[in-house]
Amino acid sequence: MWLLIDLLLVGVFAVIGRLSHYGSLTFGGWWETAWPFLAGALLAWAVLTIRRRPGATIAAGVVVWLTTLIGGMLLRQLSGQGTAIPFVVVATLTLCALLLLPRVVVGLVARRRSSD
Image 1 (spheres, rainbow, N blue to C red):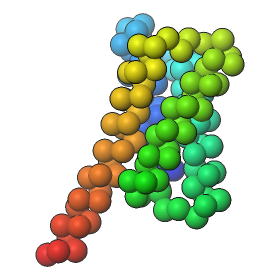
Image 2: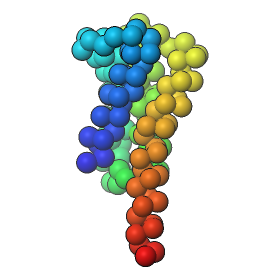
Image 3: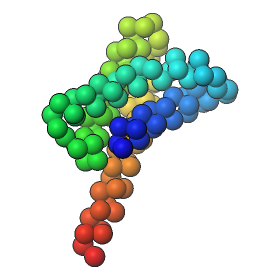
Image 4: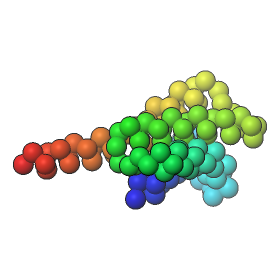
């Protein structure tokens, strides 16, 4: 389930980026922005699967966030897309929020339920 959530949230990241920079959204434009980060997220999940780590933990979220970010930026660079410093900063913060906050909320809810 977390794999699908992560991929969906990375897709949302690309939608937000395309709309904020271009004011419109096409599938081709979205895909151009999304594919490097989707590939990074899939790489992160391959690592989590090999290491047998559950996807719901904050530690897994950090792996997904950083691998998505670094992998996405490397693939953008290799494919001739931009990796300007302001973009890297915004992508770092946005992906952190999108990929970690849901796990934090789920963890807090689970702790609260277990203490009741």
